Image (cartoon, rainbow, N blue to C red; front, side, top):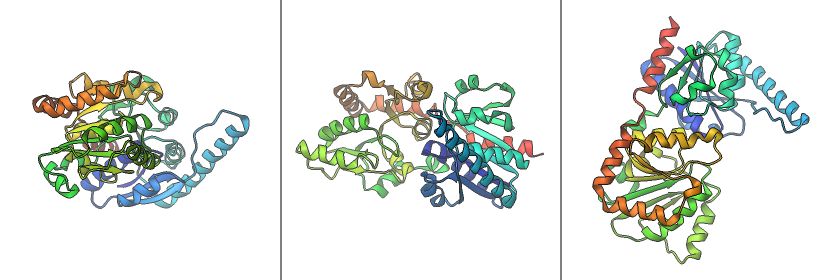
Length: 367
């Protein structure tokens, strides 16, 4: 099978595409997979490291703020379609799979025009604009959350499968991860991160946790600040007179998420679809703070699905209180039975066999 996968702009679109590609390679080792991404986006760094050939095309959201910007974005999309059509003629894919982001628009349009069977995966409870725009050109739309169904016209095209998570998360081992990261086996490990770009509001919480946990025997803290915020976090710690102890790691970017999640006891994060899926697959209790400005408030509903099952504390930004977060952290540190119960409840929310379901559906339509 010859497969084009596409999705870009954020890890939330890229890693699900890689997870699907990995499954296809696992099931069909002789398959050929090509990733098409957008110029100047993080897929340029992530995709080659995952072992896939990457080609880049122009892509843009439709910018309606002015006539000039609308024309410019339209030209970029048309340029991307032309570039994608050329790639299709050279690669001759059987299947095109898009996982979101505006790079999917030119690639799926070109794939459909070429005659490949096209598919989409929508990770969030609130469907993205690109996926809604492409509905008529695909065979099937795979859903990460059932609630996304209301945003699509043709309900017969929809299939709920959960969110694709890379095999490395299912295989992650706590003991091995701690050895690799140099974390004591018996420590209570807190891992806070705000995504690849970081989160100012979570970093403020992280500084308070740092002040509490720093040099605390029996506790370790992994602080993923995001590249833009790392210098500020270190300055803020220094201004509070905090000398960073050996039990604290401050990371501007988390480049091995399976190990960091596996090594942790408690996760503090936003609730993007990918973060929620990876956290639950690893069976980790969490404190989730949805990004208040996410389209359709979808991060709230992502987190609510886990909170309703008892797997996380859901705190909206408007209710966020640093002292309350510290109390919750210390409560879980002191009550390991509660921690274990939340971890089990989180794991019960994890997507099961998502990539196998997607692969099987693609193969069924191949015949």
